[in-house]
Image 1 (spheres, helix red, strand yellow):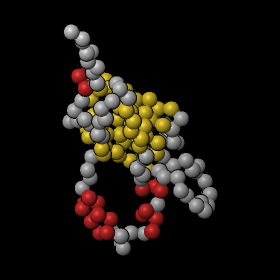
Image 2 (cartoon, one colour; image 1 turned 30 degrees about the vertical axis):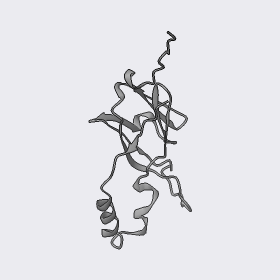
Image 3 (tube, helix red, strand yellow; image 1 turned 60 degrees about the horizontal axis):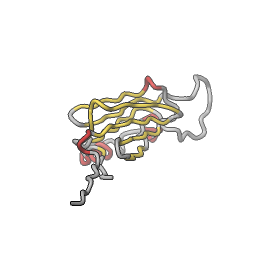
Length: 145
């Protein structure tokens, strides 16, 4: 089986670096809290016919997730809303991340853009990316003469 390389798209590292430090001393400590967003974990696996990306998105509804492909880049974005009820609760500790996320991946050229599907179940979003026919491995018969 020939393996495909699929990598997250590159972000502007220096821009992110500068944005982090520009506001570091001007923002309250809760600026870095769970309500500011998150980046879901992703597994990538390959079969002979397909590539699969599995995103860990517990606590989200299907309608809170958006998937798109443009110019060979697959983007998954969404927003996980707060699970806390409206009340006078005193939150002692909060580690469940919420807020917006956006993950983008540059797709290999041998992905059939007409053969992409997504399934969301038990907090896992699985995107199946079909390979184009000519990229699949071929076995050639050896004839004896």
